[in-house]
Picture 1: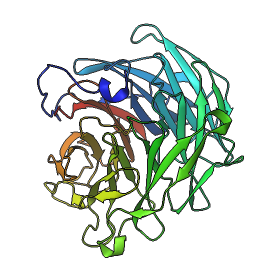
Picture 2: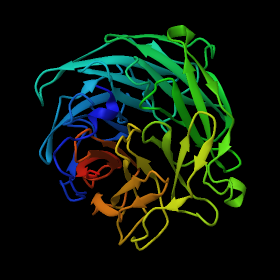
Picture 3: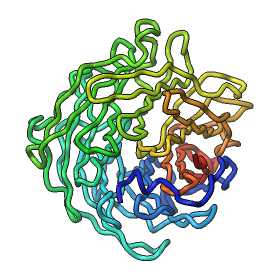
Length: 420
């Protein structure tokens, strides 16, 4: 069943948004680790109650770990911790369940260069066992945590966004059910250049109805929010991509400029040719705002919506770091967002927002609700994975010092974006 069909409930009513669905759970990394970084989280399209979390042990050897989280109601059970990278000095990483094979995870991680493995898991919740394939060298370009690997439907191929010397790149890898088998050769030992200049890796999505079509987005070095249409062809070492012209997504706003560089941005696919881009505004009229732009692409031309802004029900309107639904697909036009508005009331809570995209390219937002980290002043990084159940149950992972004694630990919380 295609991913987009898995996300749609049938005959179960319309669940409501629930930001108070569950309490924050601390010590996600488990005993023996007091300093962890680089959290990522992903939802399993084969099991609506299953997620996977990856992170780096930054106490000593900097190992890269995975844990499975299985939900039952408003609680979840964690698997044993697994050393997925089988190596030290792990930094940025990305994690995805294999859309074609249940019980398989694709794990991308950076040492001095990015490597990928297929991680297999089995067993009952809380006592899963794991195995890993050999490490596959992805590229000579280092991988950054600012953008995520995405699947090309159920083809067994994955697109990895990269950045080299201020220029956006991508690499296409191919994985079987047991191993990563190849990468495109058209980009040489580095990757395929996307031409656009940027301070951060581009966000890339693949059309959920057609794995030959994709879109990239970033804030370029002129502070413009830009996109390029991508057309994929070939497979294995012959995989390639043709790249469309760079297009400004808000061309009438400060000549398209005014977005913050070196910070977050996210791109989400909402069906065939339908997208939403999120970024942080840098100059008026969107200075320091969570800015969203919906747009369509029909294969030859763009139809742009107007920029709109996240909720202002917080006492300070300055948007900090935000992340959209990690897996970057929403077949029902519901997009989960987590992030912060700086320190509010002496603390820095993690907020949740639900954004809904209409067919006319307008965006609507719920108010921002504090969902975790409500008694702590540190919030360094957050990610959310929107699940495949009717209620769009999110597992959000937060990097903070929730136990009060360490600089940086992981906690997590379940909440529900609701249905449509």
